[in-house]
Each structure stands twice: as C-alpha cells, then as structure tokens.
Image (cartoon, rainbow, N blue to C red; front, side):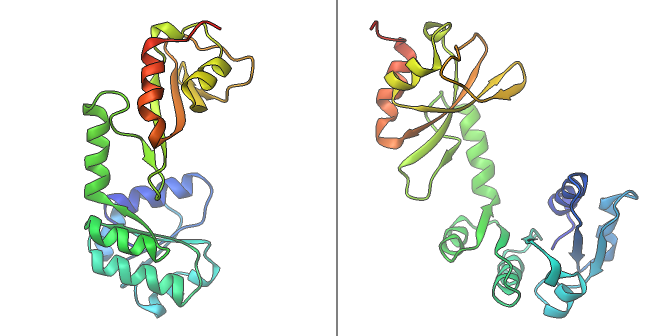
Length: 215
C-alpha cells in the first residue's frame, strides 16, 4: 500500500527479484511512478479497506507492506492485513518513533523513517563503534562495521575473534561479501561485520585498536 517514492521503488525491486506484486494507492496518478515495464496489479483505493485488499489479491499474498505517507493509514492497514487476513509478514512505515516501538511490540514490524534516517547519518558521522549498524530489541547484541586496522592485517580471523570476543559474520573484500573460515586471514581494505555483546564493546574496540596479543 502506497505508491510514492518508497512504495514504487519497493514494488519494482520486488518484481526485479521475480516476485508478483500488487500496488494499492488512493491516487491513480501515483502509479506512473512504477514505469511502463511494471507488470503487477494496480488497485485504486485505500489499503485498510478489506474489499480493496481482496481486489489486490491479499488472500494469495505472502507479505504486505504499508508504506503510504500516513502513519494512521499504515498502522490500520497493517493490522487489517495481519488480523483479518492472517498475513504474518507485515511491515509498516511509521514516521513517529514512539508509535513504531508500540506496534513493534504488537508483532508488526515497523520502519520508523525519521529515526532510521537519523541513525544512518549518525553511523557515518561518529567514530567506529560509537553507533552500531544494528542492535537487537533487548539491547544486548549489536552488529558493527569495523575497518581492518593495520595491526590486524595478515592475522587469522580466528585469532581476531578469540581476542576481541566478537564473531565475524562476514567480510566485505574488494566489493564482495565473503564468509570467513578457520583459515581466513584479514587483508588490507577488509571491512569486518562483527557481532558482539553490548557489554563487551569497550573491550572489543580496545583490542581492535591495539592489535593482537602475542600468544
């Protein structure tokens, strides 16, 4: 639901991945954003109207995204999709971070637009480790991007993990992602995506900065 910049981009991206997509919007002119190559269904109406959802084929859907410009419309539509039609994969775009947290606890995945944008900017402004890429809802586990520092170049990823008490989820190397093995060695230019406990962050970044201890 919603064929603005976000909705139209999302619809085209899903179709590019060979998914069948229906798009709902109250303004039929909005469908022009989809372009002439879009093959999905275009339904004019409000996405919280059960008949409109049925017309869009929600009974056959695996997922529903409410990404219109209105928080109330998105919340209502997401709840109707989940509660009336039993769709488990439901995402709602919410501008108000407070509301987003409430609906997240009710089982509706939310994207708080303002908070998300602010977080993305923060991660690019602050020093490494100051703000994680992701933090789990309990606040205990975080995912960080760590550029491979000079002290760790040529060292095995196993040693890095043991001494930093982090786990390397994957490595960005020369523009491609790779999963480390026990034999992997950290190379210059690597970006390490590490998972760690929040309580361990200070220790981890001290070890990352200082380099490996001799065994």
